[in-house]
Image (cartoon, rainbow, N blue to C red; front, side, top):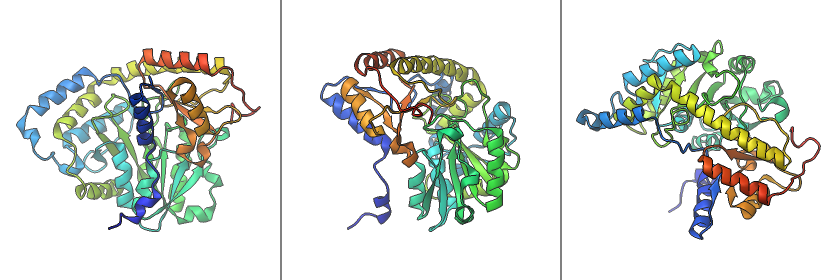
Length: 398
């Protein structure tokens, strides 16, 4: 008996590797502080929890979810209201919205619905590690597109060879960006739509950090004229409402792509538990203020981390999105070596940039999703144990 050959292409999942490292150290009595994983520690809003509890007590919700793979009509209508209120984007909830078990699932159903074996699929590098496995699972080949600091971590669409673009059938990208924190601009999104239209490329725009921006406007891919003609946007309640464990999100946009993804879902799972969808409606309709509270909290943590890093020798200005900081590593280290060095000295865990792609080498990622007291302790350990670090002339701005 042999496992499927496709599994041989898939490296160990980064976050499971980090969790194993943390658990092993803690089992040996080490007081580990993880700044590596983006999982909010603050509670989900009380009103959302109460909505779940109330809906869970209704036995009608104990059966298969309503409307199965598409999601409850009421949830899809709430998504449409949220997009119109937050982004001034109009959606047809019957044909342009699909409920998801988190946006990560959406990445997979997009691949199953839109990509054929042997296809070439563009993927930003560095990028979220979950995109490539979805592409490999359908027998296609991911093609990395570099994102560099000098271009504000936006892919240079004009630098993609025309022969490569002609072969490509899809493009995965994500802004505000995990891991870099970069944000898209209206000009870039307009160029992306034109690029996708010119080369007949389906866009999977992953936007779960849409609400986590500092000092700039929120932006949806669907704000770009013509976006619905070429792609879909994935979003999630995980990050704005601290609902990572609830597993609920949405795909919005091109009705043909939405229908293809729904067909994949219909043959994979039975949809999102109705009670969670009712809780999602409560979040989308009534918890805008909670988002602002979390942004203030993340901004304060962000400023604390930046102050400590600058004290230690970093001098870069971070991009304005997500609750991550994507920092260059000091001279003499690869990203993994620096993470190991920090862990050995301080028992603080960081995420190595190389895990996000070839062009992630030379960076590490800090996450701000940790209790304030633990963050303060982590920063104290860094100040006390790392000492002044040094960088090449352009290392802080690359």
